[in-house]
Image (cartoon, rainbow, N blue to C red; front, top):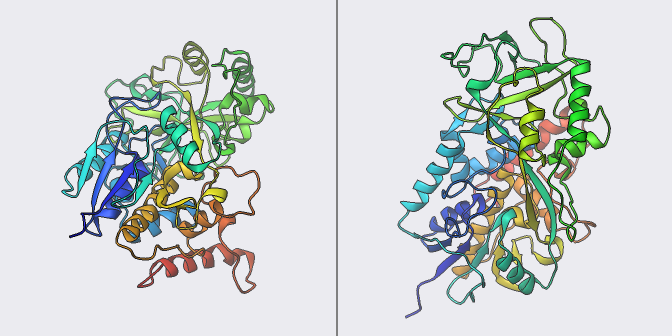
Length: 455
């Protein structure tokens, strides 16, 4: 009698929990390793599985956006991460934002209650031999030093790395709502709110916006930029080189590129009108609801490595935040990822040992949803391999397939992490007007993923 097959998954983040769920759908058992709480990380605050350590937004839900297509594909593939997000969402315009605690609690409960999953709360320092089932490594951007060395050993390749930064979270009650206005870009129903301790600023007008906007005049903006540039920052260690992902640059790095860079980045006022003046502000800082109760707001795009006292001082220069209390400070953490084009098959199997698969940010995708999507494919393939069936490769016309094609494309030079975007999709076969291209790409992707056997 053959021994029972068990899929081992290392890492209890978004990709790891997604992989575990997908494997159990095949009736196989899973041993899921998560090193917290015994070995905490600088970014995590709880012991929950699937904890979000940066923004609470999973980006756009609209099919006009590549991220929206990816989410819809994942829904069709029965993603547990998207299920959790849909069930714990908070208002955020067209974006899918979640109450981060309820989100991770939802995922943790689902995995803990799954009779086929055994959760082991200990650090894996050596990758076990995959003799009775495949192994998925989904340890994410904060892979421990010991496991990083082990991954380097089995891949025979040095890690690439960059630094990811976390945006601050503000206590909603300390926002001066008489100085901010509620609006989404190009939205309707902008409104100034009085500062009243009992006022629930989460109450949204049906025609209103989902963001609080702190408007800055020209002088206020440039004084703010000067203070950012002159503030004390957390220094990079001498033996390390900071390589930032372009879509998640710290605000001080952007400010160093030019005094107007932030005004054309996260502080851009385009599509926003201050109802008190009837004009577009010179610059704005947008605050997005962090949890369903509206007790916390996230400073959108304000990743930073300013030291904590400087964050308190400088961010209180922003109109409406003069008395702001930061419930979480911005910080910087290492993000480690492998050179996937050289190391992985399009099935996410390691070329040197096909019983080992990788998933999540460690494969070089950037973003919560992208990481979880890799968990879906790794989970399906780990199960199929363990059952001695052929692994699958998603069609490149799909968002999931387009991402995998990018991260496993051996022609890619200077490999760096990538979000899903329309540039990754293969071109349409026939010439069509530019205005119709995205619509047709969406239709093609969803048609592919909806086929009876999409893979």
